[in-house]
Length: 496
Image 1 (spheres, rainbow, N blue to C red):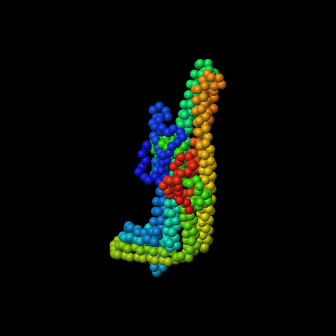
Image 2 (cartoon, rainbow, N blue to C red):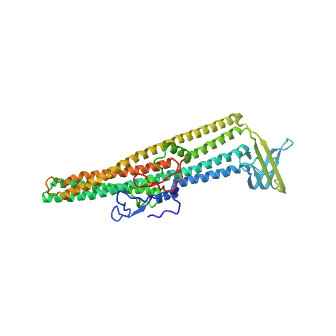
Image 3 (cartoon, rainbow, N blue to C red):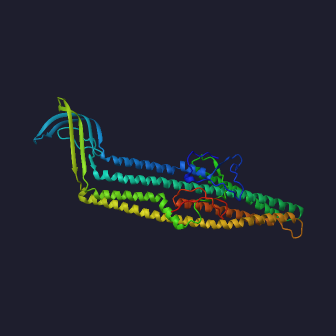
């Protein structure tokens, strides 16, 4: 088996070890000469998907980005430091303090540091001092410093729920790809079994034709059936290789390899109890689906931003700049007089943006974002409920098909056995069964096996979809009680 990474199996899902109506899948048997088939099981595939899926990695990277934004928002209260010298040179007209305009030539040099709130600093102090470091204003909006971290914290929660959502989707995608692989493996087994029966039929009809007890036409018809079954084997091999490529892609294994499932194709998985009421399943989905937690956090973030927009004109802003260092200068012919210097500017003010129209537009936009987030939350709730109901109905329909197929399959097997026995015992006797009449039981057995296989895998697929729809709540150990259903690996699960 391909060794999975040393990580825990998602939610404790264990691989089923079950009897099956079909022979073992023989995962090491080459599909074509020289080809190596690598076995893989469901639990190992799920571990690989949970550890290597790129969508999960992207979601985790988004969490890291949101955490960085939260740290940045919390740091709005802290000043920024600007270090480095500043040289000023002026030649020409200037207005002195008394008001007169004179022609002067001067220069000054500031060596030190400036600390300012916000992302920049104010202009230079009259009569000298450090020049502005950037074009922005050294202003901290207290409303932003209060509410930005609250909104950023909700965004972090939303992105963390996004990781759970990506994990949920990745495991469902891998499970469905694995079930497609099991379907292909099962159809290959059915096709190979049918080839064996067709070869036996061709041998019987040929023997009867050679001895005169049968018709050559029957032999030719049996050979045509054999050819058809051999083509089905080739088609099944191609389908298995295609399904393998999808499993390999989702588990990020070597894309050149071919994998085959270890579990028997007709193994039954029960992740959710068959008798669980649909109302309880819907409630479980609404409580556990990570998408709902994600949108709920985004709604909370929009509520914080709306409150921030409404209080923005009311809460004052603060501008602060402090600089300290050595300052000196003089006329162009003289440069000196260095001494220490310390300057501080503090301003507290209120802003009515664009005569209030800008503030009103900001409030309207924040309210529209809140409405969109609420509508998306409601939309997701409806989607979750619909997915739960759809998966539950599909599960129940597949369960009914499984019960019917379980009754039909033994009859088809027994019919083939009795026909072969009658042919061998009644050879050359009056009224004996013609060998070609075994053709219909062979076809009936193929159809019965296919119906049983598809019903079981549709049931397993519905189980995984339902488990995904209710948000993958923790599983309990396998239940000890028995049921009348086909052999399975029953799981039970707590529901609200």
